[in-house]
Length: 76
Image 1: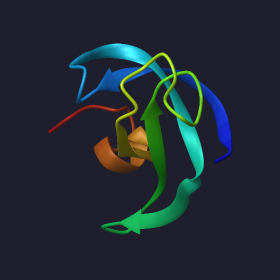
Image 2: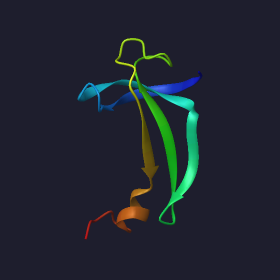
Image 3: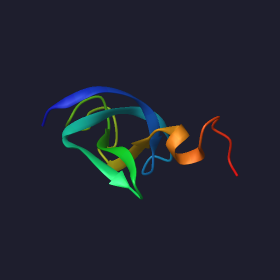
């Protein structure tokens, strides 16, 4: 498994902010209700095997704030 540089995210298994990595094979681009988005598979740990973490895997969606909330980024 290849990984990209990670960061810190909330792990739903550990229930805290931990160091994570993005798994390349879990990356895709898609549309959610007409809004372009990036889907990424994340692993809890410092490498693709989950070392120094619990090894849990989950997916995240990244979308432009202005496309979701409108120009100015205000809700409602």
